[in-house]
Length: 306
Image (cartoon, rainbow, N blue to C red):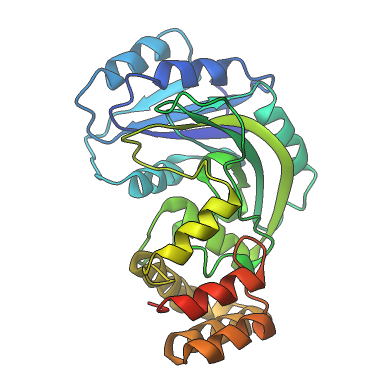
């Protein structure tokens, strides 16, 4: 098989109930110049058997059996990223369903960008709640990322399954040595430091929600999410994401632009100031949550920073 234009990365774990449906949706894509790299993380069901059966009928499907087990979706995806060689890379959850034009739409957009710098093109998705048997609808991504100001307080990145990235971003991410909360958080953060984001305001796949999901996003409305975080008393910055942010900053600090360094400097001040002072500086520093500084300011007043 010749070098494909796109590598699709799929990290699997006990996905026998839905992996066939997802792979079938990949095979129905109008863009066909891809290779599917799959690495399993110790499944105890029929996941690997199903993958082998599908790989026997489609040479684009490659199951990597190297004996490694990470017990982490994030580390499994980062391992797959290190094995990819195509100029463009897409991330695929084992339990979603992609609409036929997802890849063609995203590939058209990313190829039109300046691929001499890191690029991340992402779309939205319909939410499909299997447990509740609710109608397909809503959106899976509520935090539209434009730059670093949208990332630092989000406790996560753009959903991996929504994004397609280029090899320049892959190279930057694979250099990193430090703590990783999740693969998509790291990729989003690194791209915010060095690259460019493009948002496609279309829902190009079904994001499946069900009890027991390893990774998950919300099918709640913005109002429900807002009410939820106002009721809880969890810190604003989850420790795993803050640790990763700090490690990323220190690892890449010599390469950062003065503007990015200034943004980080303002962010770090939040860790040691009063709530009222921080609430004021949210607006001055233009930090955002779900695109709104006002929402973040309210959260800063009601919760500890860490």
